[in-house]
Length: 398
Image: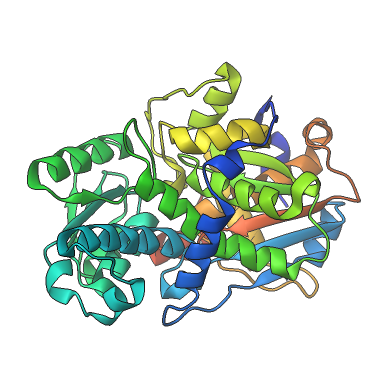
């Protein structure tokens, strides 16, 4: 491991965990159970692997490092496959039931019984790539038209992957926040339905369903563990992924739930700044991070309610440690498996490696030889060109 990790500037602010009520009020156990029951019936469903990286843990002087690899999820390359498609199904269910004046079933929508009605419901969203791919996949499965809005920093390979799933992809010149606003405005003008993974005032139902869909992943983790981890490092953009996982862990493990550490890019530190201010803060994206899936300037209000109660630490990392961290997973020691991870998947691991080199950071995070750390590799290789450049030694590949 190179000196880049020892020299990296890692910013840290302590959270204010308290009450732990939002995890039950916003994302109910019943909601998680409904999502899990539905998604695990879909064609192609299979649990993703949870690896114990023993050699890596030993090299970092930790008790255990667990890595949940979401790269194979439904063949879409990321955990997002669970959320966008499920939220799309929920939107279709609600509006078809309303139109027909009777309750329809998820199964009947999936089977094509209401194909005519579904074809009249256009679903739209903004994305950095993975959420849009999930939504496009869900729309293709259920038979709904799909429009995806992407910003200038989204690679053409990721855009093409959404087009291949039947989505109409609209690229804008601004950042992620600008694409969210355009998707919302055009949906309102055309009577389309937004299926976003982030909230804004008056809009929370689809983002909640997205987060509930992610519960499949956390359930798979919990069922594999005999004891709770001491820490979980969760990379974050607008906060939906982290809030979902933190909620499901709290609901399952109770007071034994692991210490939640939120990790963001220093170029998009909206949760970090919110934690400093103890209220939601929007930040300006002046430069795109290599971790395209973590480029978000404004937290989801709903996610922040959860994370402000659950997270003990908020951290930002520089881009120059991301590519070296991806390479660590492709060059394993001992019997650890080779893992092909995308750039947005490795933020938590990057912090762990830095903590092994920076003892003050290690102390702040309460890490020692007894720590059992859970990481979620949120994506596999979703852009082969970027991944190949990283393997060849490139760092600035955004």
